[in-house]
Image 1: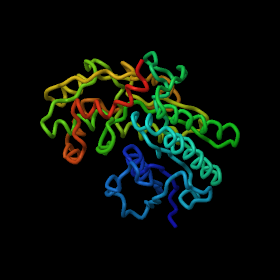
Image 2: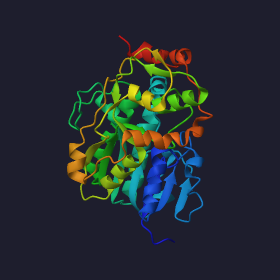
Image 3: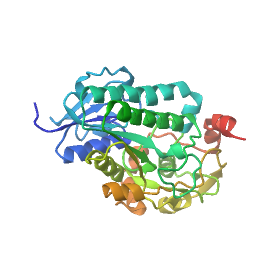
Length: 331
């Protein structure tokens, strides 16, 4: 048995979770990964899979018993497992509530049964809805679609376990995450996956609206650092925004990628801007983003071939994929 401290990363084969695994290993932890591979991929862990201080448990979080082996002796639990994307959540709301709320409760019970020192929840800035910017943690909560609601309800469960059971918990509300290993297949979703495949195929970028909308893009290694800071603190029962605090327009991303553009209709329920007020996390945890947007995009372009097998979207296929979105969220 290793004498290293143990951390659990649910969703550890996923985009952000796999980078959290890297950071924890670099900080001398033994890492137990819990993932059912519904959204994650073993290839995200290929560089660490054979290490003696990494153990993988291919379980669905909804099936976890409180005494599950992965959590025994754990110091920290980082909970990233869940399902994302807007359109599928509109079409399958029960699944989203089941995984992102009930699944979170299962993980909380595992953490409670094993007396972990800190549980850190991966929350979403989508809880703020169409918020004023920059957006502080105290802004009104207004989820616009079932994914946003499910992630917010999961966060509420986390703080309920903190209040009722004295489980030391914190939450990090992630803004617009990007970086290596971002999801490349599946439903129409994040702009990077869409644009990178279009660049590889020599097709125009499908820009929503006029491209002037801005997003608080935050590089994945900076996110992992925020989660580490939220665990490695005496503070408990708090939530923090994790964004760069420096929104970038979609048009700026197109400039960096270079290529032609075709415009698709603006969608209901999407904010014109996301902009994290990071005053609180900087004050409480001494954290701020380190990776400039241009550097982050350049880092991703080094691995652009990872998008070879990603779906290629065009205005017609996007219209088909977002039909449900317009139907239920439109005026």
